[in-house]
Image (tube, rainbow, N blue to C red):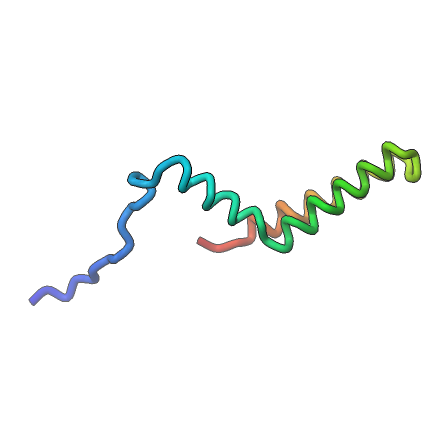
Length: 78
């Protein structure tokens, strides 16, 4: 007998429809970190439009938030 490791993970993405891909991507977006990032950016944009904060401060804060978000996304291991 061969002691080969049988892989049960088949490539199911080839059979997935675009609608299924859409729902999987949408579910991945609805994570706490993503929601918090989007809310912070939206609030900062509204404050900047209403001139409650200066646009240069908005740019600085928004850049930090987005950089942190994408920096933590790249740390994920496959």
